[in-house]
Length: 173
Image 1 (spheres, rainbow, N blue to C red):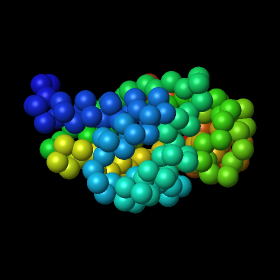
Image 2: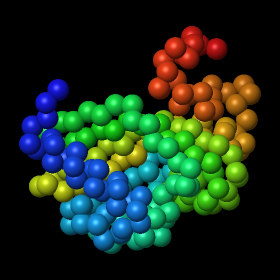
Image 3: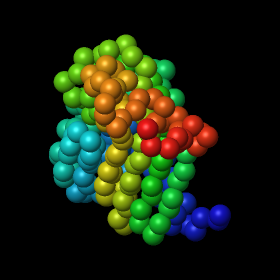
């Protein structure tokens, strides 16, 4: 698939945005966004609305505090439309730091977490207008021991692994 110029610009901007978040560069992170963006970590309703809200959330909870040092990102798929980019990935890490954006109020557990994420990035006039980030919070809570899967239709890390390796899929249990 060949990307058109607009789609390639969206990919480049998203990659710049992600790198700035991981590098702890708040100014560059915010410079990739519109004047009135919003950010929603949907499972926990954490984020911000408007430039000041997003800036405060990034500053206090995300940029430079994103994930522990052993984090790996495995890209699964990317879909690019006219004004939206959807990134599907599996993120794996050891929960050794406080992660308010994902596990607000939960102290580090030292447990390994593997979770499938879907990030929907909207664009307006060449900047990021919003991010909606989804993941299976029940799977994460099972992995850190806060949710007992017995008798519940939830799984742990194997749900993320099945996104990468569909041979792991099973019928209903």
